[in-house]
Image (cartoon, rainbow, N blue to C red):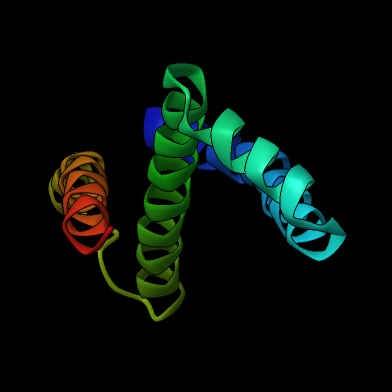
Length: 108
């Protein structure tokens, strides 16, 4: 039940995150000064926390979608397995988010 609620919350958070992507693209199209300001804003501590949260929401929502896809195919309805899968979704989303950020820092 909690996993379902978090899936809906992350879906809503992705709307906000998409506005951030649009903001970044508009800044890139507007010129160097505005783009540099947006890059600075996203590079602050609060900006990085927001981006980290967006990354986690994106990964968690994707994994939750895969779980729902599996259910649509008729698998994973047993209570014991479903509970383990919900817990694995939380753990995997955190691990994948950390991995994405580590790779991002290595590449950057």
